[in-house]
Picture 1 (cartoon, rainbow, N blue to C red):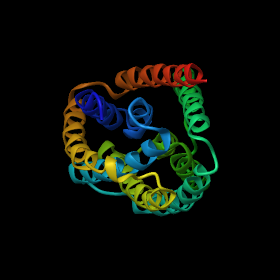
Picture 2: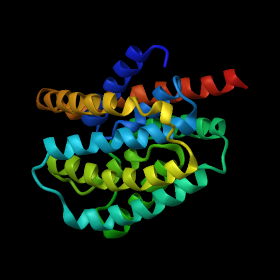
Picture 3: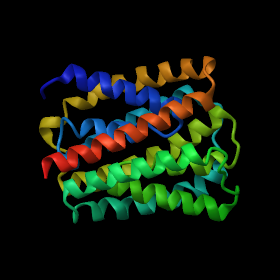
Length: 243
């Protein structure tokens, strides 16, 4: 890969922002990796990268996991991520990339405008949030923002929030990694990136944990949303430049 150092640096930034913002690194990593790899390859590498990222978060934020949410949010997430991953093979990578850009813009604008928006902390919303986030993760590579919104409604302590989200994501990524493998998205010539991204996930999560100790989550969340919006614009621009 050309510009490997730049790829590693941007992956590290994605991991830090994903940890602090509570959305998960894939929200940033997927569009970033799209500048270096084709989109289906990005889906495969993202799933593997996220596996190591989630293990890091579970290890560093291990002050408890909400078992009830793990069931209500996690099970539908795993089922729908498999369906989304299977459907991804029926869409061209360009259209999936365009969908990602649109999703990022809508998501960021919604949260920037509706700063106080909250879901009711019900089992039905947990199941719905898990289903939507899982399906999006399988289809376009990222659904952590929807899961983050759902978990936020339950007002969990920060460490429990991150650990629970990471534990659910671990099963999501394990499931879609299998589907992506059989879809041919995980290529042998990209496997050298896995140990690199493993180190990136540990370092990025640790830096994110340090930042969370000293920076207002609300203020940083706004910065993250603005970056998501910009990323969405650039992703769409890239799509039309290739047309």
